[in-house]
Length: 265
Image (cartoon, rainbow, N blue to C red; front, side, top):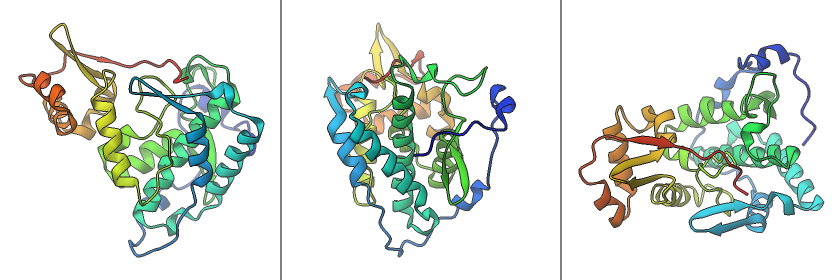
């Protein structure tokens, strides 16, 4: 992918004020279910399967092992995604497309700045933490940041709280980066798998010294899981294993929220 250009709106970015470079509402219309165009995510799947290792329920990415050849493949993949007329895809293809674009851009950002201890150490403005507001891709003439993809497209368009289990921020505390790309064919299965995997891992939810501690995701985006902590717990129970379900019995509020921003390396 072409090198990130220095924004002429640098001052606004340095103040952590988002600047939109195009009309994001063009991505808010879901195309017909009958549209048959398919995006080929084979390159991304190969990269994921090559560099992800699973240990104790966590998927780690071996950033330091990525070869020059595979860096070029990632670059080619992102350029291919930028060339897609995403508004011509059916809803499941669109959903998979945006998840993959978000995750591939995140890996690309880390590799561009590697080595780093945390994605929060990457900044494009004097007062900003993290790369989330920087325009990193251009799709159908619209410049997009990671925040645009997650909060202006994925969440409002698809209105599926399982989005929070599949967009990966390259951190230990976030949901696993899966070892295969999302496609329209595996979308539902991977959404469900990712939710179960995260909720039943201690970084998702756990009982410690009689207190319920959950991921900060449920604090930051509580409205996506209901109107209260009790609704969040009901959501957890929907995906909880028998063991976790028994542990959650009797809880109607959350004692603490935690998140680990260390690199998922």
